[in-house]
Image (cartoon, rainbow, N blue to C red; front, top):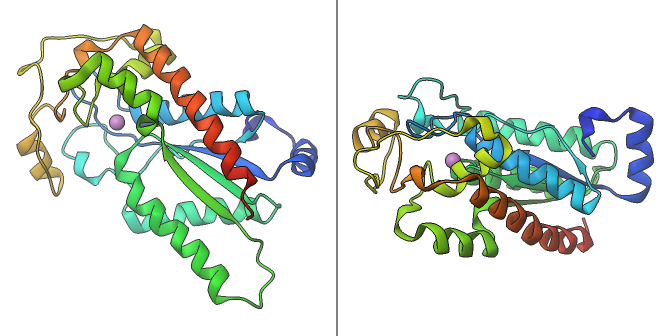
Length: 249
Ligand code: NI
């Protein structure tokens, strides 16, 4: 059930049985020489939408541009400043809260989003705390990284051990291939497993990680692995979502 494919009377009816909504979030940024620019948004969206089907929960439009300033030295990458992203999250939540949505479950595909989303949740809660006399609706927000779920971690370890890395990982590339089989691309990567390390801004990132990958060998990706990871993430998050929805707003 996708919000953008509903009518307003259908949303009104939905709100009588549930006030929860799933919001897929990702990023639009380079993912090495073979990974898609949309990898993180594709992954968040694929997991979020299947989670919505499995749990009969409404799914909001994907927030597809995230905080990815460190990728800007590679063509095609886009970013919101942290402060912009915080404002975007706040406005998204508050517009839906106005209609009665109370539980916001963000399915995330990008590590750079975690800090700004956490700050956005604090902003939202701070307004509720500071304006006690207002009739603001109560909301509860949770962010989960699809790639951090227990079963996903197990499969990544089993299949990719020391070649998973942390950017342009074979796990996330596999998932994009399961969603878009026509996106499969492999090429010789030198070195096979990319270097590891830290970064600050875009120039520093490109200096340290010349082809964009960090610690990974995405040539190990496969459509079959992507399907397994997709199912595993949805199974883990469905359980977590049920617990979340049971908590008071
Ligand atoms: Ni990614």
